[in-house]
Length: 108
Image (cartoon, rainbow, N blue to C red; front, side):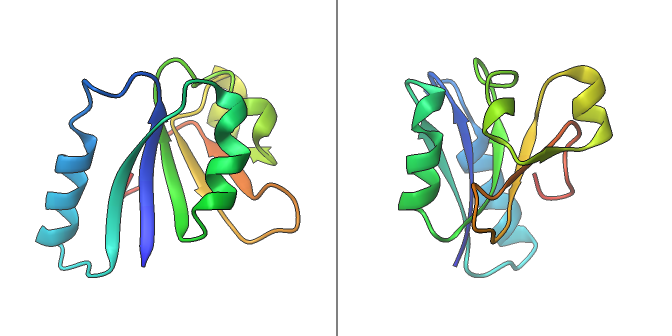
């Protein structure tokens, strides 16, 4: 199972779960899911990662596009220039395995 998701707060307005669930189905991507992860504080991010070992990517929305940066192990050039992150790629690593990207990836 590969899990993707959205972090932010609040997320009651978000249509992302429905959108990406339909997209995964349309593309025939079995074993993929998209979840909403409302974080009342960005400090909850490390625990979210620890509690969800199948999590491979996150979209970032308000209010965390900037405040997530200190939690990341690296940024792409766009995120460095803009000073904000739209997507996070989670990779295996002994440290907090996150890379922020300033532009959207194909599935995210």
